Image (cartoon, rainbow, N blue to C red; front, side):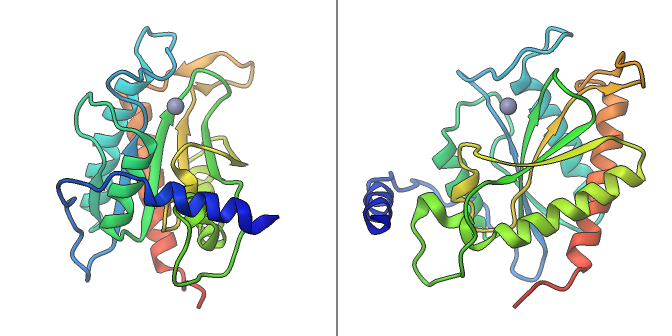
Length: 225
Ligand SMILES: [Zn+2]
């Protein structure tokens, strides 16, 4: 019965609206990274203890990470630069048109601690010429796991606690590049007390710096054929 779900996915992709404007393209010779600040506009995301909404925290973190990555020679493409509503399909569309070498959706949460890395739970598949939109990430899961490994090593090296999970996140399964969602949780002491909230500027800078180091390591890895 598998072909039926694929056919449905294909029909769904055909019904997607076509972008009115072409997104900014990364120059082919450069290493492009798409940063996707999750939530925005009507979608506030979660609320942090500080009273900040997740959509504002991801946007601020997006700016910090962008400057860290740009300083290391990456060509950064962002899906949003302001408090705008962006549906998951539109985010994936921007990312896929950019033909970036990596995509990083950004979230923030009050639960857990340190940095949570998420890779799509979709079943890996071999790359084919035509991939259904909804399951496009299946050809990239192995590279996404390798990217998560590089980010994990860099974050641990910076003294942060890290978790890696396979999960379903809206938009993640549609991405046609190595993709790891990054969720910033509070930095906590051994006893569980919060030492830095996800919207703390110095903490965000520390996480962004470690992620940029992780992307440098991932970029230098030889990709599989
Ligand atoms: Zn979120």
